[in-house]
Image 1 (cartoon, rainbow, N blue to C red):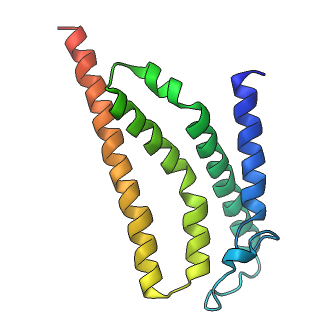
Image 2: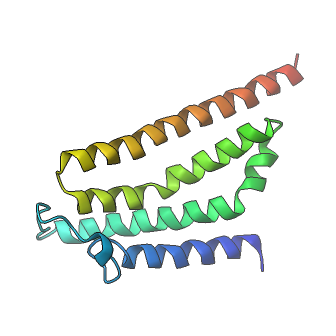
Length: 149
């Protein structure tokens, strides 16, 4: 099977499961919406559904990237093994995080201790991932410049 086919199958399979396991999905009972979360109405319903599809696809693609993407990141250039792995994990986290993040927001509602835990757990780790990726690409750029001096 071609690598691209594996990625597409993995992405779509996980996206379908993620969509069905969303808080309002048939498999999402374990993190049902908090009672304080209002019900969507009118045009909000398909817009939230579309957002759920996009987040589920991003989740599936992120897991696919986690499984199959390391060789692609490694091939970019001569960064250290630790930095290459950190960049690989950072890219995967940027793709994966949206589905559990929004689902946990819906489950938590406006309970502030839970909200703080969510914000720190997701936002801070995304900031760290962004710093890692910036450093990774600056490292590659410096090495690229050194080749042309």
